Amino acid sequence: MKLADNKATLSFSNGSPSVELPVYKGTVGPDVIDIRKLYAQTGMFTYDPGFLSTAATQSSITYIDGDKGELLYRGYPIEQLATSCDFMETCHLLLYGDLPNADQKTKFTRTVTMHTMVNEQMQFFLRGFRRDAHPMAIMTGLVGALSAFYHDSTDINNPEHREIAAIRLIAKMPTLVAMAYKYSAGQPYMYPKNDLSYAGNFMRMMFATPCEDYHVSPVIERALDRIFILHADHEQNASTSTVRLCGSSGTNPFAAIAAGVACLWGPAHGGANEACLNMLEDIQKMGGVAKVGEFMEKVKDKNSGVRLMGFGHRVYKNYDPRAKLMQETCKEVLQELGLQNDPLFKLAMALEKIALEDEYFVSRKLYPNVDFYSGIVQRAIGIPVSLFTAIFALARTVGWIAQLNEMIADPEYKIGRPRQLFSGSTQRDVKPLAQR
Ligand code: CMC
Image (cartoon, rainbow, N blue to C red):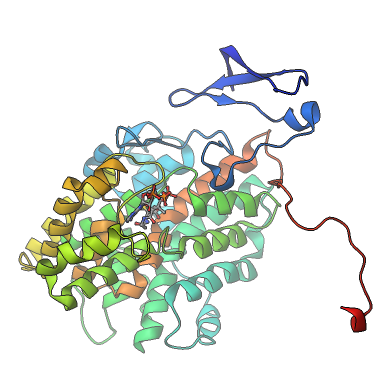
């Protein structure tokens, strides 16, 4: 870390001696005040629920400028990656720090492809779930269960174990998501087919049956690949921080990623794509575009508890760059499938237009996020709504792994152990049961 020219001075109104705190500069973005010695120097903690002003780590993977609406993976703008690269190149970039050359790409893709199969026992584990189990419940279980199948890659302190666990997780996630879907649909599992692309193979495992040949549509394949790229990493979001915190205890990579899957499930995070599509379908049932105004009044009424799903973001106070790319993809996919007049897409555009002009949204800097259009694309492709967040988990796995491996390789890494401001009862004595 590079020291800044200035230092921060913390002074107290009660005359306690002031404390000087070092300030560090990143390559871009806000400086940080180093408070690591604050407790030793003052006996005080800092208080920041929700991490509104706290950098929990240093990282060189992903950079977001929320005011500009900018997203960079290892310095490359998301717009360039989404238009000039594929998901395998993006995985290589996130994991190893740079885009692969042609040979590296072939080798990396081959390595991932050679790990797409899962242990055959996995299907018996899956069979323990109810057929109507939510796919994220299944995925939390299946990803955690990988640690019971791949004992040779569970030592997080061994770089070779970390490497093979990374490849296995990236390679097997599509297989597991597709298995979860096939199980719920009561269809036979489709084994991976290694001459297809990562996205093409996933589509085949999802939509093919052993009875028919399956043709992968290049437009849909590309759209899915773009969805994967756009969701691949997003710096220290809730699920990534969960993976880091979980992994900081030294647990195995599969367990740490399972924790990330569990966190992603929530509607304020990855579950927003499912919640957003359900919201659009509800408005459609109420009367569609004609009811948008009425719905917006509910959103603005703080007592209603209704939020415009797919809108707002902790970091972006401008248009989420992923939402723009997703809107483009949405148009392409609907065109390809002859669904240009898709009522949900029209509804989403109407909601977006009103929200972008409404004082409530403008003053709070609420813009569409990645989830606003991703559900419409996935639904058009034929992916069931309940599977949307599992697709997000599939794509985010590389980001989680890259962040986890970065943490473990960082000499400054320690087990994560937040502190608290205690507001409960002070010490008291237990009374005998009859006197309570
Ligand atoms: N609809 C209506 N009002 C909103 C919304 C929304 N979607 N999002 C934020 N607000 C309001 C909120 O009520 C608050 O108003 P006030 O200042 O009057 O109390 C203000 O905007 C700030 O909101 P916040 O909840 O303090 O902001 P946050 O940074 O804690 O929350 C968020 C960020 C993403 C959880 C929130 O915007 C939200 O719930 N959005 C809907 C869910 C969603 O789309 N999540 C996907 C995020 S992107 C993908 C991912 O990260 O997984």
